[in-house]
Length: 190
Image (tube, rainbow, N blue to C red; front, side):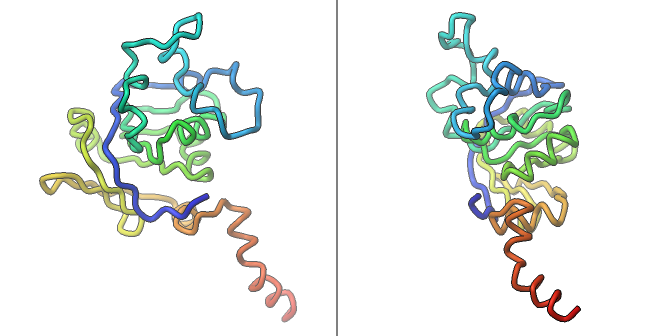
């Protein structure tokens, strides 16, 4: 993983509420443990017809869609079954962060462990983002603040350990392995 301290991008807004993990990545795409290539399957049933041809009306198929690294999703995002493939697919599509007023706990945990910054903000600030698709935002993990144009800002919380791992660019195992020297010194003293 790449260390993340700041994400700067415009937003892609999917205002639908209760988007479940089967909509993010349908179960038929869960047969792989490879993280790459899943971006094609993200929101597959929203993006493609039954014959596999693209839906021209899908927001995710628009020419500039992949330029947006921040997804603003409706309330109760990623509810449903737990699948690590959901954050993998969102990352492979090009998203680096997802923002909502409510994100399923299991998805949020999986996302943070895999380098997708999953942010919960107040319903009021969330409504403002939903109303302004394409808004340029700067997400700062050090200050735990999102800033936008005209002084717009929102604060958020992240689990301290997940935040540290994101900023170091490691997963949980990578964090432990980075502490090998300190662990060895501790063991030598025991």
